[in-house]
Image (cartoon, rainbow over all chains, first blue to last red; front, side):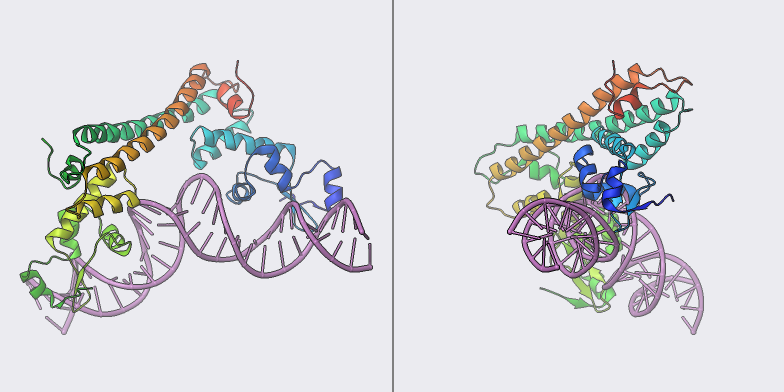
Length: 148
Length: 148
DNA sequence: TGTGGACCCTACCCCCATGGGAGGGTCAAG
DNA sequence: CTTGACCCTCCCATGGGGGTAGGGTCCACA
């Protein structure tokens, strides 16, 4: 653990930024920056003498990487793998492609589950009068009575 | 709170079943049956003298209702609303239809989010050679470099 | 020099729906 | 009376966050 202890002003002169600036530079919340460090995605985070976290440009790159990957729906575990490949100059693009392809499969599985829910629901909604009477094929379905 | 205290055998003679039978009859896990009671979806659960929970056929119906609704992706709060409508003979089918329609909207929003993720990912995967070389448009995208 | 406000720290609790397990009591068959 | 299958309550974990409390620190301005 390269824990560099610096005074605040001194750290800034050396190109470090504090967590507030890291938030603004990356778009990742203060909470989540600390969380990503805790689960090991951000390494070698230095501290000032007053225990303030100090980040480098490389950390900000990593945070933006994580954020983009989250936007694409990758889990933290998948992101952990992607980050280590990103940082490994001897990686094969095949290993990255494999993770992405697997993730596409997961997404498509999820999409088809949700799609089958909506298909069923749309059919039930179509059959429901939607008026002031109590009779309702939606409730009938939920209650296990097969609709006509 | 109609808390009927019975001996085990006596309860069974009166048509009650214990949580193990309720699990088998409903397909809902023991854990979740207790949880649904805790959050107020299962009411008037009786107990034996030894503090064992006792369920009626009506409880089993309710559990199956919840299970079916979960299968269709409804949240517990939505299920709470649906259950109270189900149990209200003076409900309007319109109120049920409204909940279902709202849920369809939520599902479709989720589906289009996932769909846009897969679209992006598929394009990246398509552009990735997937060989032993390190160069990779997927990582380039995550790192914020715009792909060609 | 002091003070105020903006920032930072740790440590806790919450969401949702669900599973796991510890530690102990109860039932019924053999 | 033992054995094993049940049941009970209570606590902890998941993932990807949000909130808040109670404290320390930095800096600019009076």
